[in-house]
Amino acid sequence: MADPHLRHRIAVRGQGGGAVLLRTDRRRAVNRPGLWIGTSFKMHKTRAESVAYAQRLHSALGEGIAGVRAFVIPSATSLAEVSGALAGGPVLAGAQNAHWADQGAWTGEISVPQAADAGAAIVELGHSERREHFAETDTAVRRKVAACLHHRLRPLVCCGERAEVFARGGSVDHVLAQVAAALEGVPEGEDGLGRVLVAYEPVWAIGESGRPPEPEEIAPVLAALDAEWGGRVSGVLYGGSVGPGNAADLLRVPGVGGLFVGRSAWDVTGFLEILDRAREYAGSTV
Ligand SMILES: O=C(CO)COP(=O)(O)O
Image (cartoon, rainbow, N blue to C red; front, side, top):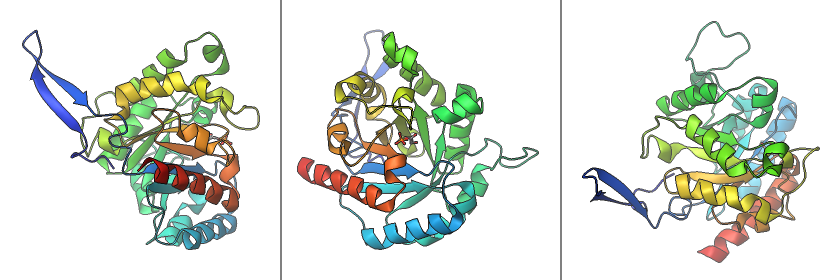
């Protein structure tokens, strides 16, 4: 959660006479209270499997890990039971999508109030799989962000460029445009941008057909996201082929405030290993 005491904003008079905001000490400012480390199950796991995972995670983490905030995003069918199994512990539950309308004739969708009712604290939005296969647009993501904030849930806005954009050197512009569109009109502060998570997930790095990135390949986008949003949102995460072996290196990329993991975290042992890498990293940077 964004800490207003760490966010030093100084209003000064601009040369044109208008007030401008200078953000100082914004690097890691709001990320410092904790690294966000989470997983989405995508369309995997039965209810029984999801609950067993949540129970193991809940008991393994006890009171939690200093410097780390963990979350699990199961399928909608398992959300209520997973959030029940995680209740009272340090791990948050989330939904993989939610509609912008509170209710209505939207067959097949779930609303933000329904996700909240099922125990979601986070709603993932704009994942590249939803953009590609379900025609989720920047406009839809923006409306969903507004709905999440209205209901005081935390939107996790995914962004990322396809391989051809990366190959022609267009990653930074593409990702900044996606995030600017998603967050257009969101006010600064605790109930606005301070509640938002951004996950940079280059499409070429995601899933079985993706490849793990070299830290220097993702560094320019993360630096740009950090410069534009780092001190204003709750965290900027990296996702795409994260595993126990590369988690520490990816956390060291400047601007990274957490990790969003798929395959490597679907076995709870893998997620615990990644959380351990995050614990070590958080401990080394205190
Ligand atoms: O899409 C992702 C998380 O949402 C990342 O998936 P992988 O970690 O399996 O590449």
